[in-house]
Image (cartoon, rainbow, N blue to C red; front, side):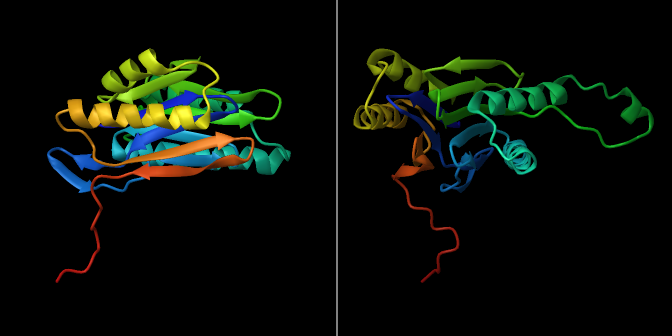
Length: 218
């Protein structure tokens, strides 16, 4: 019942994600940050199986950092998106016959969907949609998860190019309100992150439940 969505505005991109860690009918925590800061000017919002999401996003983050360390320049947002897509495609289509014959552990496809946002000096903000079967599209707005039924509908109605930060955050709040009111198992909390010329950073949280994991009991 996850929800990750994002949009591009005038000089910035926003990525929003729910913060629930769920398995079957259990909610393990409600403050899970599903938007990773890849580098100083890139955000990666992911939904999918918890293990795949954590392992794959960390793998992408470390390889983006490795490229910058080796070459002295960061990957562009488009290059990072294409690298991410390539790794998903490799995992999806890899031939496992030899590994099976030798009884080795082999890599499975990643059950993870990604919105990758970034800001490049000469290009500006951009947003890329990458799904678990390695489809890649550059978009202005997009969403994954059950919440996408409602967030995409709200963005189709209210989104326009060149939105200010205030307009974009207002639209995000409309999407969150619609998800909470219409989705039968709606996640209670959401995190909003922004990337612009000043870098990638957390913008705000929208919380209706405070996580008490680890809190002392009376």
